[in-house]
Image (cartoon, rainbow, N blue to C red):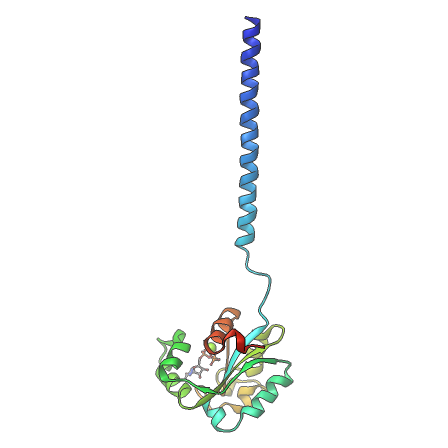
Length: 184
Ligand code: RTP
Ligand code: MG
C-alpha cells in the first residue's frame, strides 16, 4: 500500500513535470513566434536614397536638358543612371497607368510620347521628398521660386519634369528604364 502510494505520487509528479516542461517549451515557441512576427511586420527602417526622374519631351526639344541637370546637380543629387530615349504612347500609358481614369490621361500619354525624354535615377539623402521640393508644384503657376518647374514648365501638362512620389514608385519607375548593370 505504502509502496503503491509512493509509485502513484511519483507518477503524478512525473506527469506534472512533463506538463510544466511542455507548457514552458510551448510558451518559448509562442514568444519566438511573436518576436518573429513583430520583426517581419515592421516597416524597414532603411529609407531609399534614390528617386527617379524624366525630363519631359517639350523641355528636351527646347534644349533645356543642360539647364535642368545643372539645377539637379547643384541641389546635391548624384546621377546614378541617365539616357536619351523615346516612349511609345503605349509605354507612356503604362508608365502613368495610375492616372488611367483621370481626364488628362490621353493628353498626358500623347505629350509624353511626342519626343525624346531623358530618364534618370538620382541619389541623395531623402531623395524622393527633396526632389519633389526641387521640381515644385505640378502647376507652374503654383510652383515656388527657384524650382525647376517655375523656370522651365510651360503649363500644368507640359511641366518640364517628372519626379517619383514614393520610395516604392521610385524603384519601380527606375527599373522601367534601367537594368541594374546601367546604374552606377
Ligand atoms: P509627375 O508624376 O509627372 O511628377 O507629376 P506630378 O506628380 O506633379 O503630378 P501628377 O498628379 O502625378 O500628374 C502627372 C502628370 O500629368 C499631367 N497633368 N496634367 N492638365 C491637367 O490637369 C494635368 N494634371 C496633371 C502633368 O504632366 C503631370 O506632371
Ligand atoms: Mg506624379
